[in-house]
Length: 239
Image (cartoon, rainbow, N blue to C red):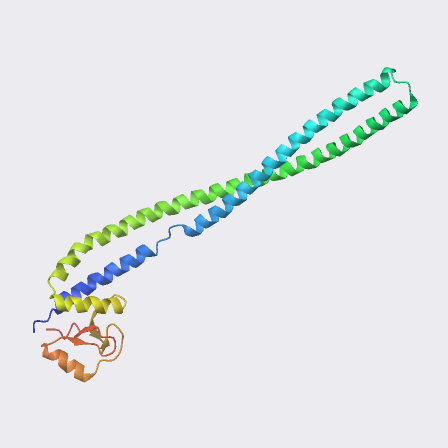
């Protein structure tokens, strides 16, 4: 039997390298954590902006209401002091109306002042959350550029090695290649190994003397009794 030790071990070396590249590609940081942080910061920014818009709208409404009260008070005060109203009851009612307008005005003044403080605080929150969002956006852009650069590099290496892998695989007989691929799928991408320090180079289980003897005959493939991988003699013993 013509054992294809050289081809299988060369194929395994390439598959190991390709597997490492695939793992490296899969492990690249796409910026998901920063993207989640950005979404949270954007939500806070939008909530602050909405709060500010509501406050400013309420403030404009209060200012319009205050203006209308002042105009009404001015009108009623002019009526009071023009001297046209002489009936005591009417005068008392007008004075009470003016007093009520003064109290409403005071209430609105206080409300407007409190809201001005709220608006100032909310504007500061909008500025802070906007800066936080922009910072996360900048960080995400950097990470995505780095990811694109690294993924392009790794994919280029994989693409460059694939023709060599295909070429070696084409020289392996179909039944041997099929078994190699099955073992590789079951055993973490490793299907062909040498003995290292008296143990299988894949699972590290000791190799019995009977297995050693079978391998030295070089007339059939030998498989690890523990992990079922193709097993070859140590490099120094290979002929």
